[in-house]
Image 1 (tube, rainbow, N blue to C red):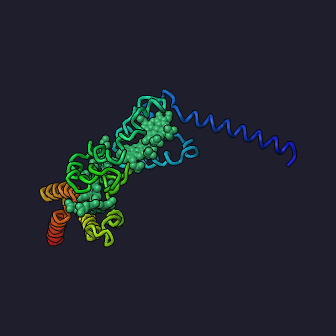
Image 2 (image 1 turned 180 degrees about the vertical axis):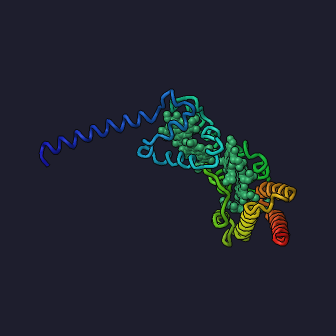
Length: 256
Ligand code: HEC
Ligand code: HEC
Ligand code: HEC
Ligand code: HEC
Ligand code: HEC
């Protein structure tokens, strides 16, 4: 390589480094105009695609979530101060410390601020009792193992089998029947939900407001019951709602 080539390489290198630091500096503050929510204003900067892909992915995850749709933002779960434009001030003491609301042991309390009934029931489980006794030493599932952390969803049967069989299996001899039973139950639940939508979409339920109200109540009760993990009771309730739905479907078909 000639002198000129080497010079150009050094020149490009210096330019690159300068741009990099300018870019990184720019990623540590946001302008006062977009402080409607500094967490989002800063974390959504495309520069993070390059400098910190990992944290950028959390933003992308949020952008697609039910929580974003419902106006639940970063600080609702993480705390921090979304009115401050400077990173350190916005993060405050909440983002890194062990008492952060998204720290393993705090998660169910944080989610439970908004999802009270489910969190109260979750607290009755062996899982939670073990969690508060042994913490990270013997981790048991919390809300995010079943739902994900930001872009949450209702667990699919296969997902549930995978999660539960981690600990409940023939080798551990810790209730090895649980994974297939849990996944059987969410399969029935998803059948109920799609059958219900089907009846609704055909306009068949418009004349049966009492039935709709009763089903909505039962479904809400079932969702809450799920969080106790009392699988025998969940099974009984699931199969009852399923029969209720099938019976109504039959009645409606005969009336057509
Ligand atoms: C001006 C930019 C900026 C603002 C404002 C900002 N952040 Fe950050 N955030 C970052 C950067 C950069 C990182 C990567 C780690 C670091 O540099 O501290 C980060 C990291 C994080 C992390 C990961 C924790 C870690 O230590 O890696 C969380 C969680 C987080 N931010 C949440 C928030 C919340 C909640 C708000 C609003 C209250 C917020 N951020 C406001 C730039 C910002
Ligand atoms: C519904 C609650 C919720 C919302 C809303 C939410 N987060 Fe989180 N976030 C969590 C939980 C729980 C964790 C910890 C589990 C994990 O890492 O998946 C987490 C983890 C993170 C992490 C990694 C933490 C670390 O220490 O590495 C970052 C970064 C982050 N969130 C950024 C954000 C940003 C930015 C927003 C808004 C755009 C946001 N989160 C919105 C619940 C939430
Ligand atoms: C600041 C309030 C708030 C916090 C904190 C919060 N959520 Fe939510 N969440 C909502 C709202 C509002 C909805 C949409 C309405 C609804 O379904 O209740 C929602 C919806 C959901 C849903 C239903 C998703 C679907 O597809 O139907 C799940 C599951 C969920 N959240 C789990 C969590 C978990 C897990 C956490 C903690 C990591 C959490 N939420 C923290 C407010 C919150
Ligand atoms: C990280 C390990 C771990 C995972 C993953 C796990 N569990 Fe557990 N589970 C435990 C431990 C430990 C116990 C307590 C066993 C005992 O007391 O004998 C337990 C107990 C239970 C019990 C019995 C509760 C009681 O009161 O006797 C049920 C039901 C249960 N788990 C359901 C599930 C379901 C459903 C899943 C999947 C979503 C799951 N578990 C995933 C560790 C786990
Ligand atoms: C063992 C897995 C599991 C764990 C752990 C779990 N959930 Fe759920 N969750 C489910 C299932 C399954 C459903 C769907 C139940 C239904 O619709 O009948 C559900 C439904 C929900 C819903 C939507 C229905 C509703 O009530 O609005 C929310 C919100 C929710 N869970 C929040 C939480 C929170 C908060 C925690 C932690 C305190 C948590 N879940 C822990 C399995 C779990």
